[in-house]
Image (cartoon, rainbow, N blue to C red; front, side, top):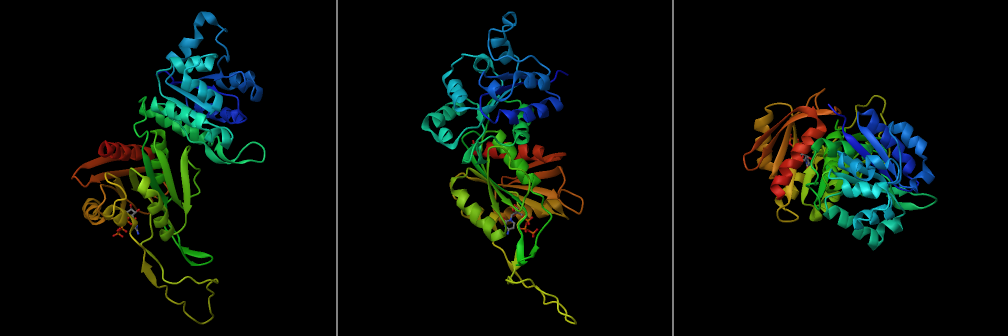
Length: 400
Ligand code: CTP
């Protein structure tokens, strides 16, 4: 089988050096990559680097190898074009259809999915000109990844950082795997909770669970790759932030509830993948609980935590909002799942079997998605991303 053909456009920003890592990931995972830098990009990383890492010739202009008509052919033959970093200038040119170098010509001739990963100073990103250009590109079906927040060039901090190259690679992989040009969740805002809550007993101890957060992160990553604006409410997870996703860190069930209630009013869909502790210690000891010689420990009294899924399902923040829950079951998986779907009042319930070595922390999952309309969708054993894609397919059906 032919290798998927990827065009890596690189425009002139300091983050160009991070595109070398993206290039490596793409080539090492079996993609044929043609790098098309702008002339300014070569001030940051030279043509020799791009050429050596991609194994292909590199040019910025339409005047090299004219007999091969590169300004048309490169775009026409691509399965994916990803521009990382995309500067304000390149976004503006792409939005207005300018074609004064090889990259901008390629963008006009490509009929495959196009991903832009912008990186620039916060002021440039927030400028209405840039925001309008981004809106234009999105309206036309391009996937423009929201920049990350953090340290920028120099002493500045703010929104405008290029997301982690590994996470941009994940977006490219998802977009190529789906093979559709139009991101179907474009314009939608989704909220995903992930990870496991921790209920503190004293300053050093907590009541927790085995959730790794991987399924929730896979849901956030796949939704972003399908064009959604994603708020990921992450309980005690150390996984890297998926590209373009707004991560809200939380600790306890009560904090998770507050974050979900804050985000839900703007959301088209809420997916509760987090493992929320049903109980918390009734009292929190401000100092470390010490053992006492000759004495048994005090029993720990627990109180119920609020059921967030049931609450947001009963009191929908907006009409037509789709709410998805997860059910971790060890016995009578389907019967318990059906009963739980009714009890919680959500639209979809992803039921999976858990156990010592099943699901928690693993890269794979297997589930049945139960619908309040009586539907049952089985998802075969496979990567957590495959289950995430099915969840979003079912959510997208219900939103449209
Ligand atoms: N959930 C929630 N708030 C809680 C507990 C759970 O929102 N306090 C959500 C989880 O995020 C998940 C779903 O409810 O989407 C199911 O959680 P699970 O623990 O499997 O179900 P429980 O309601 O706790 O039922 P049981 O303890 O009987 O298994």
